[in-house]
Length: 175
Image: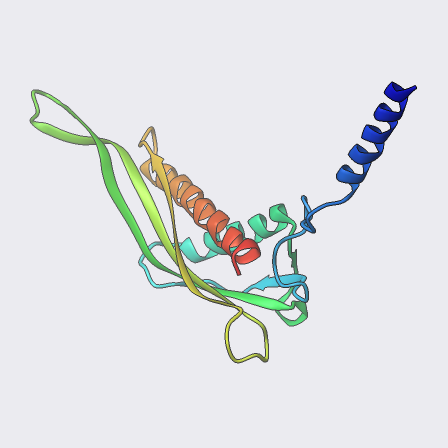
């Protein structure tokens, strides 16, 4: 009989422990301010000479906010807050070298493209920003296989995706 009582008591304690929590939700709710439920991504400015970098970055930001699910993506006029950002630097460097012909012909084998993105989040009509200006860097490596322009464009998209992941994480979890 005492074994049944101990088993019943442990089952009640386990159910109580599992039903209570620390208050955080796991899943599609962020740690953002409770009054902020939606966000808009404003036009991204491009302070570099990299073509299409701003449109690629804005697309990646929108996709990452939708994937995260913590804030609903809306238009500029209908959102609780707005993310403003600009690309300040795009750099391309050789990370692995390859040469042929007894070291006479130099040919890089692998490149790294990095995108530096500054952003802030503002609540319309409010003076100070919800998230002050922060800077994130996204990088991607690529090799030139057949077409250098296509390889570089794909690397730009991947680098923007990596920077957008950090920007969304800092927006939804680190305000």
